[in-house]
Length: 551
Image 1 (cartoon, rainbow, N blue to C red):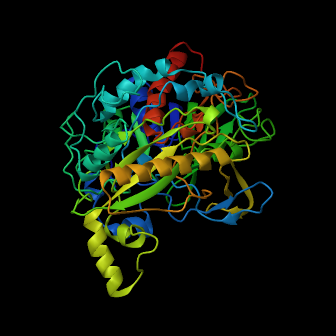
Image 2 (image 1 turned 30 degrees about the vertical axis):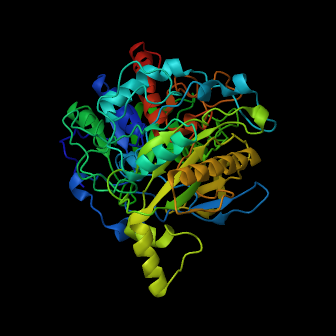
Image 3 (image 1 turned 60 degrees about the vertical axis):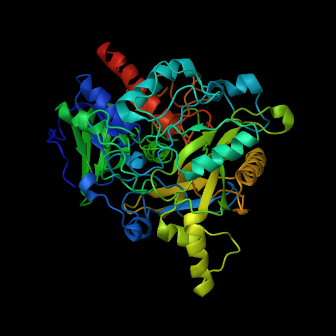
């Protein structure tokens, strides 16, 4: 758990330029950009600092003990604000240096133009908080390209007829297609759809002095021992450490942002691994703790000057939580596919990315062909719902289905509702005696309708691909998520948003937020690429403000 590169050690009393809370998809990029631009940066991460030699394929360790995620964290969940929340882990996220970028599936698509302007183009559904972003796809495109080349995305421009403008090609070709991709492409084309190679944060060829994928099949929920998965741990954090101006402190759990009598942030309070409390002074504070922990930190940082939570004069902190809607279905084929090998996904379709509300569904989505279940996970959850659960028949089903199955995941929008939110539980406490995170979430009827629609289309693809048998898993209200979006949305109006287009808090001039909480809309699933692009852009804005003396 020792950082692979020697890093500076800043004294707690030293006022660094930026303290960044979180080291995941956003924090790891902010660390690299800000330190490369000449600033002194301290990154506080609540999990360990693991390296490639620490990763392996121990399924039981990963799933039963969750060493890479917030396993065992105290949270509560309820569907509506009228209910009393019950203890439950509802928000899952990465808890290590590199965050969720270390163990995510690695789908890495860009948002499309519609995601930024949907409210003005399609209208605002009654009862929702749909709004346009204060930036457009064109504003973010150069930063998407930086993610492609500096973080490392494999793919092929021009294969998706619905894709937005790309100013450069991907740096390396797409991953080789696997059996599920071939079958998915065959079925989709029969139906007139347009499958394309999945853009992935996995290197198909060596790039930026990093290794290419070895096709082990352990991507989702596992770290990459080859360094081929383009996490911030593998790509940007080593660059940050080499500057000599960035220190990453693992096992550092931030509990509040401190402010002075003028309402400016002075630094953050945090606990170390031994539960000793410290304070890190900084000229500016950046929260990149994810879409659930960032609003929680703001609410925990309430003072007399900010009685409803820091940066919350709008009352929007924690509001408009979005999970992304999804459905999952499988198909059994005559011949072995051996789809458990290599990356999870190699083919995607976006034919339903932009739906017409006149047809009864607002938003849109896509689907991908995949196999992302390791052996133990498959034995627990990979068979059809009516399959045997025990004994010789169960064993026979495992033998038949494991090599011959492929899955389709559909992924779509979630409408922003003020009633879906992150708040502080009034009774449940965390391990430090602070109010635990309370998640309130109930899917909008439109989101459920969208998933039924996409699920039906996916079943048709399996039919067209020649599945001998197909099945789906129940579509219902979500009570658990790994996509945590929208809880501190950006906007031009301080009355309806938490941060401006520069990721700067409207209420606190030297406080910045950059992670999934910044999102105004949910996109159509797979938000990591956009989180990373926003981080590159936010670093440019912070650098310009700091160099002009405006922070």
